[in-house]
Figure 1 (tube, one colour):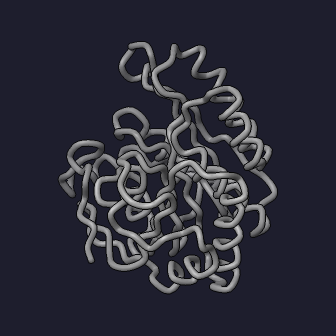
Figure 2 (tube, helix red, strand yellow):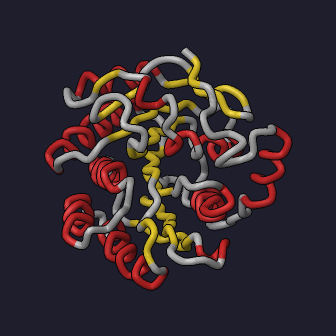
Length: 267
């Protein structure tokens, strides 16, 4: 099964040469790369708005041969916790293989997860991460997942399954949580709310992130992927998190209200 691009030419350039030019122009040559980065938080809006933040995140790490990419379910298709476990994903840069053995192992360890492709057909949150990963490492394999809101006990079930499967695989990896931050708020309010969520991520507190999102009514769409990423990374030995960049759509458009974007590396 090949998952065809859903938002190429819309969220990011659909022409291969144009996309390569954009990535070369924006991927920063960061000498202080974090080799053993275990997780990242990266935004998923159109590259015009959040692409520079994502480029800074991926420019901060050495891209391994394996990425688990988790995003929120925006489309309403598929089950609560969906893993596309077979096939390939296509972007203008070419095909990306799913690591089918790893996907099956994770599915076997977390009963809440369901093998499914329908949730991924039109979902952009995973897709927009792929060109950055492909550009830096054309050999990369992925395990794509998307989620509806979950309880923290379910977050931990998934985080433990990911951590156990990755330990058994014994291969370099990165766990990508795809998320934008506050949606359609005045920029000062968005920033205030967003940093309450960011602070929990920097403390590596997945439960705290879920709690503050609910308590403060923060419209961070990918807080569940971010919580899973944080908890799985801790189980795999992560000790620190670093805020790479924060921005919002108003810095591009000059307009309010705005959508917030944050980039974090966990290692």
